[in-house]
Length: 192
Length: 60
Image (cartoon, rainbow over all chains, first blue to last red):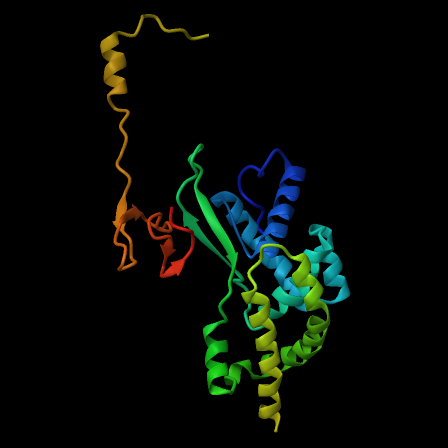
């Protein structure tokens, strides 16, 4: 059973908190990194990561579950097509919170929360050696075939998504698609 | 309802307030070798904008 959140709600009440977290999550997936107060960043992290976990599965049911929170369809598309597959080799810990100097005006402790752009150490080592660790073998094979399907989707939908998304880092989607393109090749080598 | 019996003397007021002290912020040197400025601990450096060797914020 999930532990209830301690302390008061963010904003004015439960409904305000739900809207606040939904807006923060939308902004995070739109821009990749946002600056907010430390308390909001800490509450956003599990919330956003749960959405990414849903995006990694990416079927119709999970997409509808995401749509319950994020109203912007462009952001949902980006989440399911770019962000979700990018984190396919990472099991949790998709975001990073870094504390920054307190805000001028009310001295509120501030933080930067961002989607992690780097691949995991094991993923990089595997890419360098062109092999997979034994413990990753069964898991790694399944997502590769999913990635093939996603890649074809991404190729068709990427261009309009990039036009609509404003002020985003171009690095993440590019590297995601590149990795997705490389991985099936590796899988093919392994099988042969 | 309980009420004070006597006026609190200036002396007592001032001795109580003498205990209201501010403490200095704990500062450490930035871990960026090119910067080394003093900054609060566990916070991205406001001078160079780095934290743990990673550029987090734009330096002011």
